[in-house]
Length: 326
Image (tube, rainbow, N blue to C red; front, side):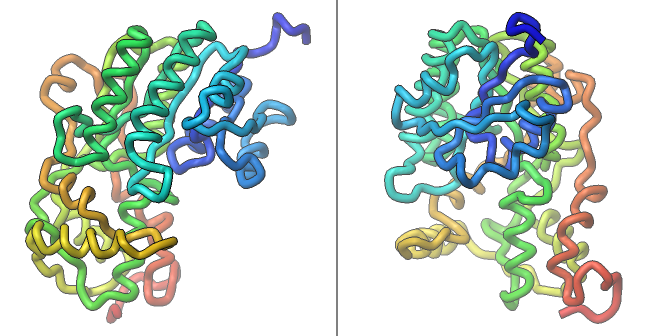
């Protein structure tokens, strides 16, 4: 195969993360060459068996260092940025990773003449009181200002084997005497399967989505926070009371938890702020057809996937189906 006949090269920033690895796998199945840009390539070797020999390569890049970003993008025809953090730690702040980093990737893609897909989040809003949502919103504005033809994907809460949402409450159900209904558990979510998000990203790389458009990705069902916890308890076969917790108390607990060094907090004050707003696909996106259904993707139900990985939290593991729960 000559150089001119090689499949297109796609650079994926954050390809070793929860969403990123699914995107890498989906791209590999489509036959693309993939360059995965991560801070620690030595910890991302598990990605290479997802493709053929030589199809997936790993390079070191840090969004805070522009030269490494430019080097990772060089020669690529498309760039996917799925870097994001759920809480701040040290130099990995929301501003540095989600805003400055997104701007650096967009500028590098523009300089390389590559198209760009940017993974954001439902709720992204430059005026939000949440630092997470605010930097996501500013990142979107920066990306579209630099690359007006970029495609932006906004998923709701993403679920799948390594998710940080359902797994968190599954672990809590093992050790805590109750599960907290923060704000009364009324916040609405539209959980979306990670493989559906990956398929949407690959369709953007394929050129099947509208350049410059913002798509909102949600699953087939809208669930309240309370319903999410009830679903978790049902799948893990445990009976725990759901105790209402006011936003103020939850925020205080999150602030204290964030002060513990070198430990990932189970909850932060910023996450509590996020819980004050619903996280569902907007009416505008639905009417414009800028959703999974509008792409022709049938969203996957939570109930069909959750039992495949949440069984690890059952009292006797995957072989326990019913009976008295802990």
